[in-house]
Image (cartoon, rainbow, N blue to C red; front, side, top):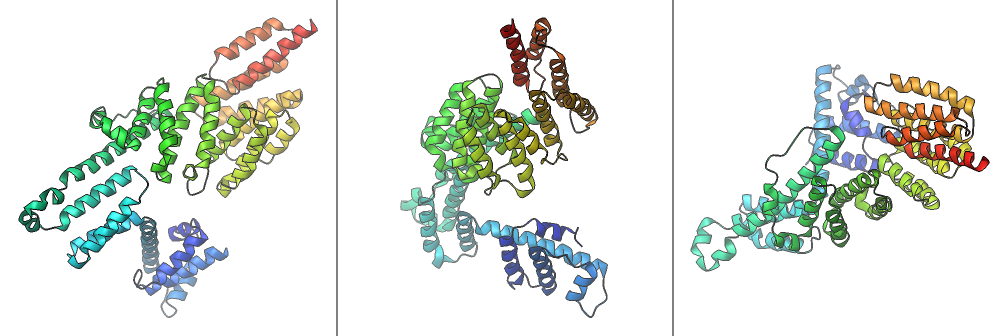
Length: 484
């Protein structure tokens, strides 16, 4: 029973949601099937208490004590429970969106032709729109829907018989304006999302005739609706990464108008800005190192950067390493401990230990690096490879060359055999291993060979920890020059 989908679904839900689901399945309005109520409540209680889930026979007896077990009917009951859980999640999502609720109420009143409520619901809709702060694509869609419902509220006869009010009742222009803004924003977001994924997955996909979207955006739209302007700027920097001017305009617009975005959308805007800034930084634009750090700090102050209060392990590690590269060790240490609590529990320990190891590496505390990396779970390939890369560097710094040689050999075998790594990723780490092996064997007297090695490292873009390797070569050359 423990592997059935309803059980796995319930185990993925928070205690708060499980309590609400329990009330849902006991409500006759939402669920009139007593068998679902009994089955659901037993499993929910077991999940909340952390106790074993009863097996199929035990659950069947609790539901039908006088009927022999029927596997087909029990499977059907599990399927019905799963549908009830899905209905609950949809209901909860609906409850969390008051702007949708009021539009559905409006639509229901019109569909049922409950005329006594027309003025009341119209006043509520107007009041809700007036005090709504965001100007997202969803806002414009809701405005389109609202205007369309207002148009439908009056019968064709009423519209035609009250010619003096025809301009007020015939709000088709307003309907289309809101729909156009929704369409433009969603198209810009779709294009930006596609461009981001094309960089990651090397997709050969294009959106046909996309350039026509820009023709729909007027100067008035940009002036009166900054959200449209912001999404256009995001698109511009994706189309032309060298357009730093568009990026700077995007930063100014974001800072000035970020309150116009709902939380989930402001994350999208910051993600786009951070991705662009990191790309510029990786291409050697040094001013963008501080820019990335500033962006992350701003984003962390915006609760929307976290998804339901959760920070991704990738962002957590990136923020820490950017701070370390800027020498902000105290800030990074505080960040590592404070935001570890914002990581999902299953990712927390590895991300925490690895980030602490990085901190100690930058502080030249190599024994502590090794100590922290011993606590990392190497079942995750990413942590396995990057932890071993840092371990090799630490043993080099400690001049533990026997251990280093042994680890180099075993790491080389691991990289070669690891099937989840692409050829290019393997090449990056194998180059690192080969360069480090050569470096550890060269004496500071071998200035010519060191110079050749330095040049080889500089000319090879496919190598992990390239700047660290160059720094170590230069240290030996400097030591040679001092001794001479």
